Image (cartoon, rainbow, N blue to C red; front, side):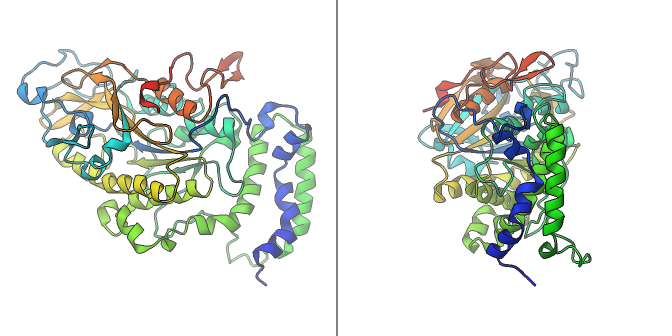
Length: 472
């Protein structure tokens, strides 16, 4: 017999709370360790941002072909002016200076130069704040991706989403606090380590949701029909027993982060059986919304679907959503070694319309007042050709932008050199970007610390400053 929502909650409500005791133990003072707490409610000043969507372009999006117009490259095109020896992280010796094969034009009141590859985002530049002199410590994908997500070149450190979850906790208790929407073609460099909670409690790691169908579903959220005995109406005694066992186990092991996370995930899964089907039902959106995201067009269907889902998730209370473009590897991402003319346009087309639609949609849903959107990548690309038409890795300079609550619209901060090779004015590292994001969330990045192996660790390590120049 099927149960309605009220009957279901009445029948197994006690079980939902009992499956995961971590939060209740913490609030009751039974589990004394701070690591047993689900969140810390850390807030150092009034927040302007409540939720975040991070758009990550895997592979190293080329700044001088997208957002960083460099006319000097046209004048010097074909000249051998690059380094004589192959720099660390380059996959080949530097070739000749190569101009962008794409046309740039100015847009908006701000006069921001944008490539022809981003015609839809170009219409919204007056709403964005650009970091034009982003730089990093590496020319290698794995460490670069780690650095842009966790602030460190090595694995084992919590990513931005995990820190936000740890500090602020959830907005709603029936959806994950930190959700990752990877590219269906594959995970990014470092795989799931990019979404890790590191030394923070495991409950704060990203929940990875594959989205590769017209109606995204979470695997194993409900019992398989081939197991007819697995009925919720028959499970109250099992829930009660599991409740008692979990209580006993948790009291004896208050510092077991994995246990707390496992119990919390069971409780969340039970609640998501009610909330997730509606949240993930993008088919319920009107046809004009689907068209605005390009879900009706093969080139934009995938990324558009995930951007629409990101909007629905933050609307329903998910605090941090990552949307990834491109998997790790040599193809189907932003790592354009072979031919920038043929490899970059399809990637740009796949995200341009969906991103513009996302920003407009967040506004229409009334979410722009407390939502932040970030566009970034792990590093840039060389102004020198690799082979004849490709571009190599370059950590010297790349571009990121922010949009939404607390962001000063239509501004650019920092500058790269005339070739787009190195950041030369107002350099911005991941530490500065992360400090700025935390600031908008009401968090002082220097005070958000966790003691680990005798060190007070933080997302920004021992670096970083808030880029107030791009904030209102």
